[in-house]
Picture 1 (cartoon, helix red, strand yellow):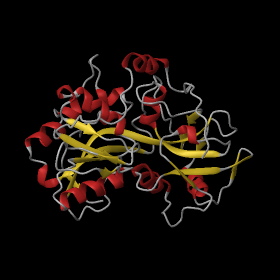
Picture 2 (cartoon, rainbow, N blue to C red):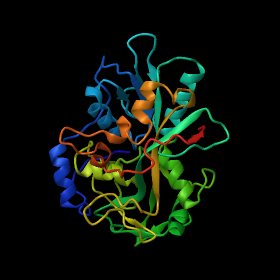
Picture 3 (cartoon, one colour):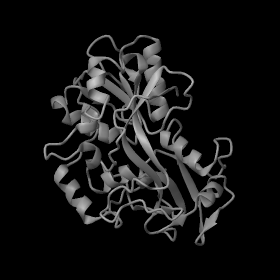
Picture 4 (cartoon, helix red, strand yellow):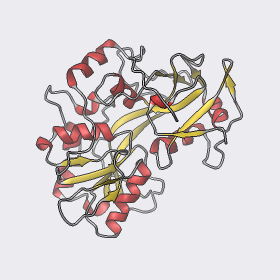
Length: 326
């Protein structure tokens, strides 16, 4: 799509959150060239920024290297022994890359970011370790007649099967995240639409990139945590003129502009590690348990990094009970 980026603060996000973002600065992109850290991870667009922030906050930035979902075609994660690997874009792509790394004994990846749980829990090869709460709402353009939407799950089902094509006098142009996106899988599951049922009117976009909403009828699923981080400039601001709406009457934000962790389409987000390595001292200290480095990371101002990037904290942070496969 040809897009133009117009940056405006989403009015629904409170000034209190804005002030936090203004103090904090943004944490984006891969580790610098030659910055080969102990643990390397890839995958989800949704959690790339918060994991970048956590990686920079713990152990002086020496332990966690989290590579973005998009950027250069390839990445290099080790000083020696690892050739450049194709950059995985999305949860499923990251999980596939991690599993391939384990199967080939490459030793180039240690974890994958995932915004969804496992598809198959009969296999125990990988362990999904939850670390935060997110939710998925729908985004539309602020300057469209679709602004301030309150859609039902039934309406969203019909929009994405192309059975509902107009709303508020606007011809709808529904968008869905790219293939391999965990948000795509999660959202379609919530609205009861399979990949085979997805209508031909639906176009593909890079997830959580509001500047791709460039016509009045555009509508897309969007991580609420990512939206908060973007409009507060904690992450690169990609929200453009998009605003988030309600689903089934559920508000995406609390009155002080934070994530509504009880939103109707809420979800845990995960770091996935090989089950065989859960007991490894470095893996365990980094990911496992409520006192792990990921769960307790704070920035230089003492703010919890998970909350700083718009996510909610969870009592199950660091749990290792959920095992499965792609």
